[in-house]
Length: 85
Image 1: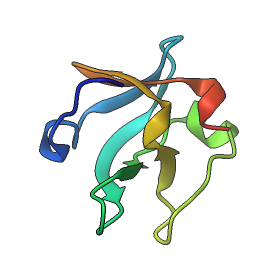
Image 2: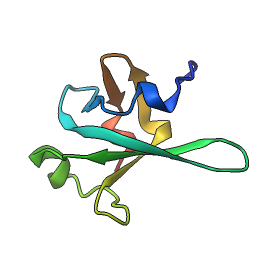
Image 3: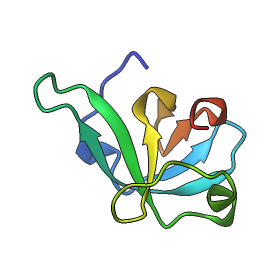
Image 4: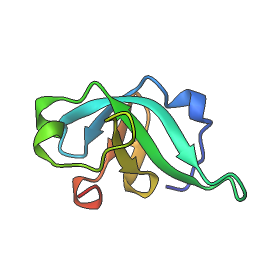
């Protein structure tokens, strides 16, 4: 991803795979405090499809998707399914 977006621009957006399968909604982002590098997006309201993927979970049972898996940010946050497993 070449273009950077403020976290507030992606919070609340629907997360979908590049194939169009819905995963949930971005609740927050996690980042490295020293470098500011974005590490993961935190996803809530998982769909049944997301539940079937066995994704990494955080402390509050939210799904964690590596920021590097993001392909595009627009009306949706589009992720590569191959990069989240």
